[in-house]
Length: 176
Image 1 (cartoon, rainbow, N blue to C red):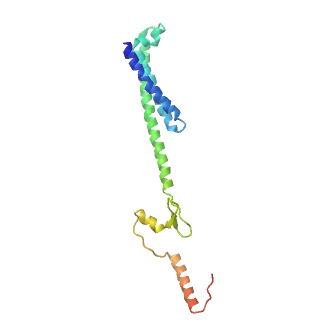
Image 2: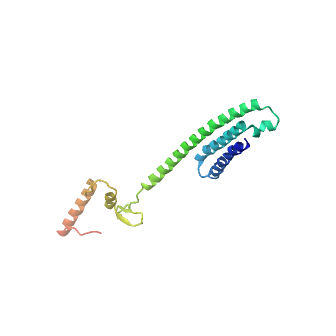
């Protein structure tokens, strides 16, 4: 009987170790707080179970109280601690998953940023070199690229062409 009680109490040590590891990381991850609470409640539930199953380590018996009413109270408290432990663990896991998804979303949005030169529209690659934007678009699997002029650039180009033609005819001097 004492061997079984010792064996059951050995289960408390891994729970205590998990609690310590989680407590050490609590500042890094706010979502671990419900998990820490869940481990504490599971620890309490396991302790209550050991106290009820093994009357030789029953604390109330050691203090001289009758066993029966207190073992019922400890059993109920252990059951509540079990349920609360599982609920806190589930809540903690959900919060951890949500926090990780939020971090992944931030990382994804930062990775989606592409540094582009405002003047020539070249982009900066990861190795720090500048390349034409067409190279990036072709590399990412975008649709085929064609070149053309927007209406503003077309009218600007037409003005420059007509200015060059007039310069060739000698009517207008070129300006820088």
